[in-house]
Image (cartoon, rainbow, N blue to C red; front, side):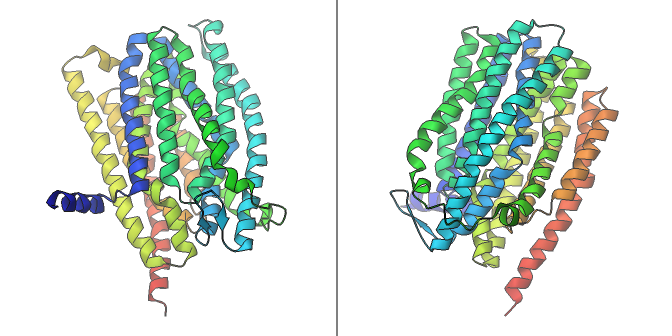
Length: 451
């Protein structure tokens, strides 16, 4: 009895309900699996191959230019309607006909949009990546990386086509169910990755994650998407130009700007310092991106609830929920990020050989600072976007431009480059975001005080 009561109190204190728990479990697995991969890769790939390994991932992130933030728009639009409907056990929906028609219209539009986006990504990003590696590579035969790149691009394009359907379910509040699916994807993908590395397939092992992701998602959606198919889309009242475009183009520009804030460092290191240094930078960015994603588990799990509270005009519940989960997200990111810096510093002092495959502790310190700042900024942005608005557009553009300039000026030294990245976050992105957040918070406070 006492143990049960203590467990309940702990769950309340940490905010761990089903959706947060599954999201957090998935992020923890991703962090642990990423850490194991960091340890395994040096044994089975050469330093040059490691550079390709992580640069592949950075260039595949170009899909953001084709998704254009639409997945986040889907969550916002669907959750706004889902606040007024119920989902039956058989996957069908009950609610006002207008609400159901809008959900059906969104579902139909999503399928068409991402079919085109997937084809364009495969053609354009695939060609751009091939040119990048062909021009900058002087160490590995084209036959060792080109076929792998083609397969990676095709699998990523297929995942791009499937991903918005998962966003539809997240918008319905099924965040935990989608997190459980992604956990299965990730577990299968990483196990296959490690197996292929051990078997000596070298760069071919990189196809493991997108391969298992596409297969598991496709299989899951075959049964889960039946409820959407039953909705009549002919009477949909969704107008793309009126209902989607005003929000989407702002989020799209913000997401594209985000590419320059998160994914350009490894390709720049590849082009300016070579594949070996790019491998160290890529490994570091992979680790800390996983840390940031783990820290944001609370925010991401509750994002649809933010929109539902706004739709129902429940400002007090919105503010209480946000402050609770945001504090946990920032604290978790900071605790894990700086612990990693300390571990790498100790390993360096102990002169462990494997530590030379990742960036130095001083470089990691600045990346850790950026991870904490990014978590805080993203949390505030999620709160503001729950209002189906995108105030982060100018922040994202200016931050991206400032980061590009800073990285270009400091590109000769990786540590200075990452310090410049952190400075942009500390003195441009974070203060600006905080000012915007205060404005939105004041709006909600006024709503509470209004009669």
